[in-house]
Image (cartoon, rainbow, N blue to C red; front, side, top):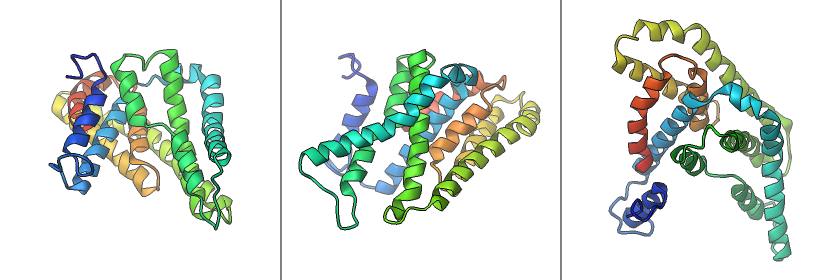
Length: 253
């Protein structure tokens, strides 16, 4: 129906989920743990493919616009959201910050929705698409910063923040090191078996994603790093073509 009405398919997926889901719909699906697992796999595969298709040279070419927008967007949006609550006469207090948390949530976009729309409209490789993707990466960095300081808002410390950023930089360094010195030989050894190339690439995706999760970062960000780190491999187009159908299945669910 959505396709016939020329509406984004992701809208149809969302409506279908509401209709059959455990919160508002017909309660045909009740297992929340399974829902969370399936949806996370979909987002991990989506960001892995996005990483495979990212041209770092083009992304860096839009560097100044990405950096300025990415650094300022979240703080400015948080301030605007908090100011709106203030004008409405609402206040935080008593060592609790619900309004601040809502303002932060309003300042951060849904990576799944934004990237899926850019991908479907073939705008991911345009200048606005690259800037948007760069801003989403900065939003993930801001999320790491916020989650690091959130438990200590009443007594801010640089220790948790430095630790989170250090883990992120270490993950990037290790991933790119392995992709440069270890993975080329591995992929050459299985290049004649396309299904093993697919399995090896997915194994790399989930390995880096698991490393990110163990470091206290998002698994999705790990999948993006995994994709970017092997985006220059000669097999990446074949990997994208094979993973896309799996991704669409999980993203739909």
